[in-house]
Image 1 (tube, rainbow, N blue to C red):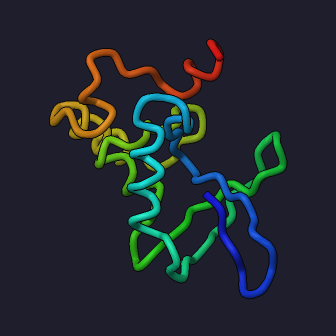
Image 2: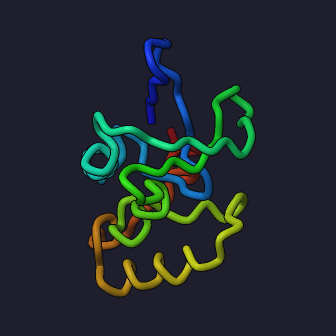
Length: 120
C-alpha cells in the first residue's frame, strides 16, 4: 500500500499480519481494488509495527475507522500471515471466509502468496 503524509512523497507500507495476493497472482487485482475501496484518498492512521527485510514499514493502517489489513481477511482478499500474526481473531475471520468461499477462497486451489513467490 502506498501512503502520503501531507506534501511528502509517497511511502510504501506493508499491512501488518496479512499476506495479500501478488499483482499478477489470481485475485491480486481484486485484492488491490478492495483495499482501494477502503483507503483510496482518505485520511489514514498509520501505526508502524516494524520494518521488513526490504526496508518497508510494516504497519496497521486504519481508514475511516476500519483496520485495512483486518478487513481484507473476511473479504477473502488476503491470508493471515502465520509467521507474523498476533491477532488470533484473524484466523476465525479467515476460516469464515474460506467456508463462505469469499474472494480468493472461491478458487478451487488457492495458492498462498508466499508459496506463489517461491515458484516465481
